[in-house]
Structures are given as structure tokens and as C-alpha cells.
Length: 105
Image (cartoon, rainbow, N blue to C red; front, side, top):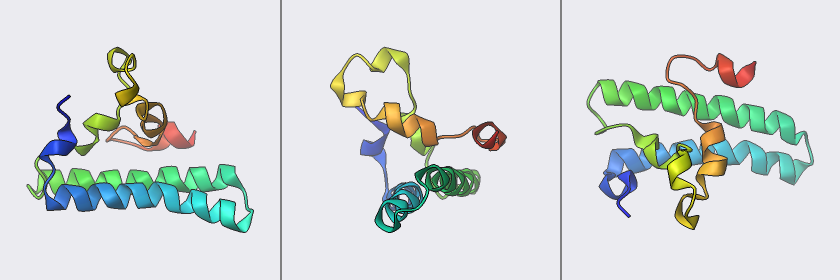
């Protein structure tokens, strides 16, 4: 199975790592300090959106080669195998490139 991640360079891996940290860190913080998990997921959504905006900026300036998130979008044809099971979770943290209101509202 060929994935977009197999074509990542250093800048793509850094941006992807930043996206994962931006999503996971608030959730782990909430679990560790026994605070609101719903609020931490909302913060993770917003921080993930900011990293995606940074990714759009990097793409428009030619710093990265393409759209990083293709392997994390939920596509019904790919769900039949276990290799794409992670998209059930990752797709919830991907937002449209022209606005984050769909996630907040």
C-alpha cells in the first residue's frame, strides 16, 4: 500500500509531528490533571487547525511538497481493511482549509 507518508521529507515530518503533539497534548493533560476531557478535545481541535493553517502557508510558499493529510482523511472505500482504521479517529481532527467554524459550532 503506497501512502503519502512514504514521500515525506524533513519539513513534512516536522509539521506532522507538530500536528500530532497539538492534538494529543491537551488530551493527555486533561487525563493527567483530571480536568474536562471535552474541553481538551476542543483545544486539540483548535490547535490542530492552527497547524493545518501553518501547513497551508508552508505549501503556498513551497516549503512542503503537497497536502500532508491525505492518509488521515476518512474515505469509505478504504475502511474495509485494518490498515486505514486510524482514519476513524484522525478524520475528526482535520478541518476544511477555509474555516474552522464547522468544528466549533
